[in-house]
Image (cartoon, rainbow, N blue to C red; front, side, top):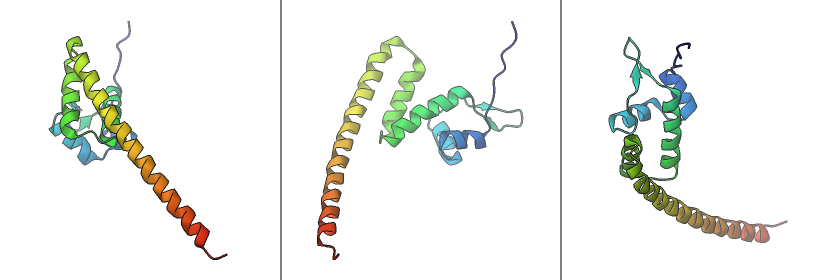
Length: 127
């Protein structure tokens, strides 16, 4: 059986693919959201496809407004991999999903208000 080689991504490639800045990647590593980031012999960070997948999850959580403390709790639970933590992971994500749903409803209502204002201005605009 042939040895499997891991393809490493440079920090620049990871920034490009993840959409996170290098400063954010460093910050996430410092606070424990991103762990076990490899290093090249020269000390530069090397990211893997798995790191990129994890960053995709973090992107979703961040972009939907999950607080950092909750992201850290989720990361800790996910990393432990203990099947007993599944219920807590589910509960955390369900709670966040409810929050996202409320935000979407609020945005829809605000959007409707904007559309009404646009229609009003269009109706009074001189021909």
